[in-house]
Image 1: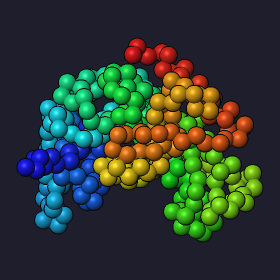
Image 2: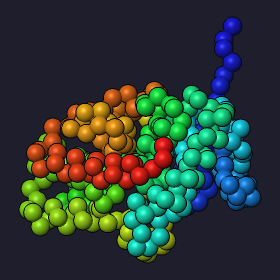
Image 3: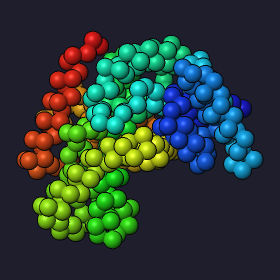
Length: 308
């Protein structure tokens, strides 16, 4: 007798700009059979769910509702986007004091009902909050993932593509480290079809500064980022649910990685149904290694001030 079918369930906690755009992206692409929206403002979650459900005749294939933390019980992936949002002129680290207390409450409510899901963290500062999630939840390190520098790397590739007039999907380029001001570009390995990009120092500086400051520019212009981070989260979800083993620069707990341990940072990881299956060892230049270690020390300094 065949075992009963268990539908894939994704829970999105937080129905702000990032949460709702992520949920809508997952819905349009029918990534799962069940999608649950949870928010401290339940009426907001209800409204978002109702609005999306009215589009089911055009999409179909997904059961979607506004739920409670008890609905986390059967979830395969729980995406956390809840928390204070970044304001114009505010850094991601500035958000830490606001969001750490919110996170303690959220993670405790999740783990009351679920100890087997993969926790995908998108709230900023994402690397520190992913680290806090690991400590609060007690989960295996593979099953706590930050969105990391997946989006930063996409911005980097997009900007390189603009300069080279080449489809960004054909660009091989990575941003690693903090999802924030201390992130760094791995210029030593950036290429198209194995060919060096040939940028001079001024061009490299311009591309990286535009990459690093992209979120500030968007927030100043429209108040928040939402579309590209939703697509980045969708990409991570697909690699998990389809057991792809895709290499994505998510944020994970590092152990003696280019001289860095006991901190979450963005690095190329093999992502599959188990979560982060493996962290790939990048052969960084000495300058890149130093910058990566400095990024780690910056975050460790902030983590040391927290009560975890």
